[in-house]
Length: 433
Image 1 (cartoon, rainbow, N blue to C red):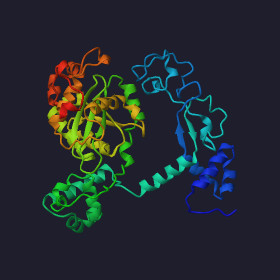
Image 2: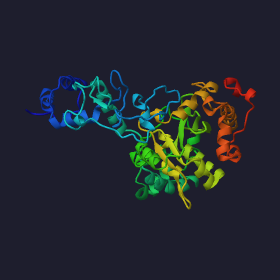
Image 3: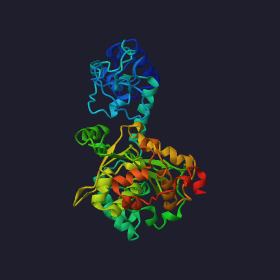
C-alpha cells in the first residue's frame, strides 16, 4: 500500500483513529484504515493524547504506590478535609513525604492509551486517552506556537541586551544598531523592536525617541518561553528539594490582571503560606522585565541575609512574566539569593495559598477594574487592610502579626505595610474610591 507523506492528519482521520482505538484495533490495522504509516499513527497517539486523573467510580485519583496500605493522617493541603485516611483523598499526594507515583505498565507498549482498557472504571491511576477533537486542538496549538512568539534563552537574551541597550540609550535607532552590528547581533531591526516591545532586553520603548509618539498596535507580539528555563526547576524538582529540606517555606507568586487591553497595569502577588501574608506590587505591563525590576528593588531594600531568610524558595506558574528565573535568582558574591521553581502546566492547585489570597483582592478590585488610576501607595493600603484581617486558620491572629513574629517589624515596614485597627478594616471597593 502506498502511504501519503508529509500531509498533516485531518480531523476525520483522527476520528477514525479514536474509533479504532475504542475497538481495540492494533496500530498496523489503524494505519491501513487511514492510509498512513504505522510510525505516523504511533507518533500521533503518543504526541496528542491527553492525561486523565478522574480516578474510578468509587475512589478519587490516587497513583501512590502505597495507597492500599497507607495509614498516613493530616497531610492534605486542604484545611477543611474531613477524610480519616489520606489515600481516599486526591490532594494528599502533593504534600506526603512517602508519596511514590505508580504508572500503568500497559501504557509503555502499543497502543499507549486506555481507550479500550476494561479496567477504566476501577483504576485510580493516571489514565491516557486519545480523543479526536482534543488531539486536533493540541496539534493546531503546537503548530501555531512553533511559528509565533519570541524564542530566546537567558544567555542569548543577556548577550543581545548588553550590546543593544547602551546604544539605544545613546539615541541610536534599532535600524542603525542592527546595520552596524549585524555580525554580532544576527537579527533584523524588526526582531529587535519585538524584543524591546515585550521587555526581553533592558532598553524600553520610552528609550526610543519616535516610538513613544506612535500609537500602540492592536495586537502585541506573543512571547514563546524557552523551555530550557524550566530545567531543574519543575514541581518535581521542588518536591525532591523539600524531601531533603522539609522545613523550608515555599513562597508563591502569581499575577492579578486588571482591565484587559494594551497599556493596562497589573499586579505581581507574593504569598507566604505559613503566615498567609500577601504582598502586591503594581506593574506597568505584564512582562518579565517588570517582575525582575521588583525583585531587584526588594534585594536592595532587604539586603542579602534578610532576603535569603524571607524568600528561601519561590514557586510560580509558567506565565511569560516569570520566564527569567536566573535573573531573579542572580548569583552574587554571597551565592544565590533564592531558587525559583515552576508549577506543572495548568496546575494552579499546586500554589493554593496565592490563588486563595486573590479572592480578598477581588473583593476590593473586582474583575474588569482598571488599575491605571492607582499608585503603589494605594496598593500598599489595600494589602495593609487585607493582611490585618484576622484568620481562623491562624488562631484568630492576622497575617501581619504572625509574619512579624517570625521575621520582625522591620521587614513589614520595608514591604510598605502597616497594621490597621480591626474595626477600621474595609474589604470592598469603597476602600480605594
